[in-house]
Structures are given as C-alpha cells and as structure tokens.
Amino acid sequence: MEFTEMDSGILFGLITMTSWGIWIILGNAASEAIDPRTAAAISYLVAGFLALGFIVVSDASLAVTARGGMLAGAAGLFTGIGLISMYIGFTQGSTTMVSTLGAMYFVVAAILGIVVLGDDATITKFIGIAFAALSIALITR
Image (cartoon, rainbow, N blue to C red; front, side):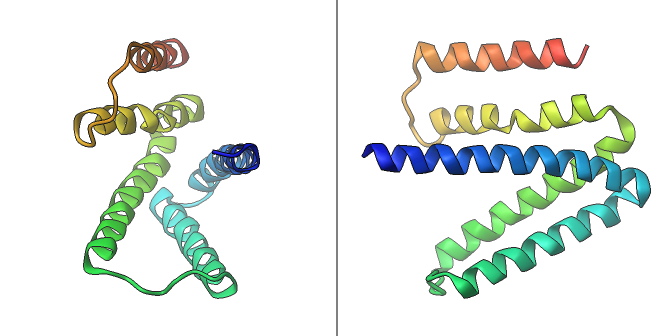
C-alpha cells in the first residue's frame, strides 16, 4: 500500500468517525422529538437518496450480479435492524451506553472475520477485543 493510499484511508476513516458521531447525537435528539421508528426511517431515506445521488454523479458501475445484489441486500437488512434498534435504544437507555455498545460492531466483525473468513487469529487481535470488552464494561457503568 502506498503512503497516499494510506492517507486517503485515514482521511475517509476520520470523516466516517466524525459523521457517525454526529449522526448518533442527532439520532438521539430525533428519537426524543418524534417516534424513534419514524426517526430511523427518515434518517435512512435521506441516506438512501444521498447514496443514489452519489451513484449518479460518480462513475459507479450499475452492473449487479445475483451474488453481489444478495450480499448488498443482506447487508442492508442488518444495517436496518441495527439502525432501528439504536433509535429505539435511545428511548430506553443513555446515548453513551447505546452508542458505545453499537459502536462495538467491529468486535463482531473481527470475530466473524477470524471464524468465518479465516483471518489470522493473533494475540494482538485478542488483546484488542479484550480491551473493547473492558471499555464496554467501564462506559456502561
């Protein structure tokens, strides 16, 4: 990987982190102002229109294979479940607790990557997962 590729990855990672952090706060406020299920639907409708607009203005390929379409659809299904669960969670618990637990999705992805995809299971990864679990325990107290 070239240095410029790493820089752009870091840049987009920081944009993602910042955008999702703001999304959590706005989503919490929306779920207090209106029904959280309605807030979740509006949030994803806007995101969907943004994604479609990005396809139109970019050079994205519109070719969809059966496998790719099914995988993307399944990903959308789990995204929707997580989104609705988060918005409803805001009405049941604190923003800090709900957003922290939700943000730990990377632990699930890391474990599935090791178990299902055959990623290397290293001591460093296990220590990272253990620290993530410790952070959950500390933040949710």
